[in-house]
Image 1: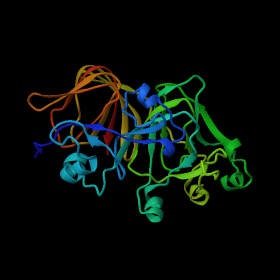
Image 2: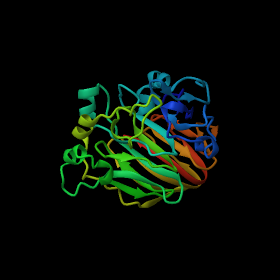
Image 3: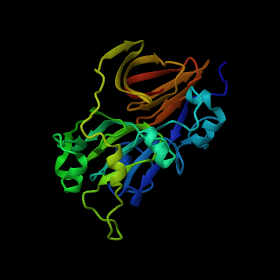
Image 4: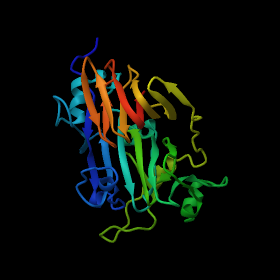
Length: 320
């Protein structure tokens, strides 16, 4: 039976900024209208129950509550299945310097060694300056990764890709990766903060010391010669527009949704929607919620008869 209290949750983000993201810039304010607390802000955590960085509800009777509070209140009605913790995290990143070269563990490894979930994620490139690129894997040419690292040759073996707006990168656990400067991207990931740092370009912090590396754990979880395949991008027509599956991960599916009117949304699974154009969410007998470009909304799994209206692209995540 449907929970009559449920409604689409427009979320106010939490931010990582200043010394926490020294590689960040001002694009989250300038390009996406975010109320970032500092000029140097690297991350806008749009839909997040990560402790210390929880997003808050911006609309309706639960305005001001954290996502974790709504998860505890609604539980399976929100996520669609029994979960010990809210499963996903959606954010924007603004990289004005190279991020550290890093890798994330699988659930099995992270639970055994950190007591937390691992992390698979995906990037959708929103903006990129001409010539911008990122690290995506390592070209080992059959050589052992440990031997490459111990001989000081990791940086020269990193595989880089030039990027353009609209490009998609799937980063399951074990994939070595790093955003490069001049890129703003949308990221969907498992709700986890477990990251193993391989390399930080020889940089030092304000204390004159290099940031901590996690070499042994990084080597243990890396799959350097196993870059994932993306599904064939087939645009499927639906009433009110079309949808294209971009990434198919065991924890989430990422879609590009191109609206051309009013589109009914699927039911039974939690949906995370991010507008890049103005649109309107409708539900119930006569309930409506407007979304501005780059606002994000969480549609609870057990809602019915929800639709979205507008002209242009949305990014949509279906929980699994």
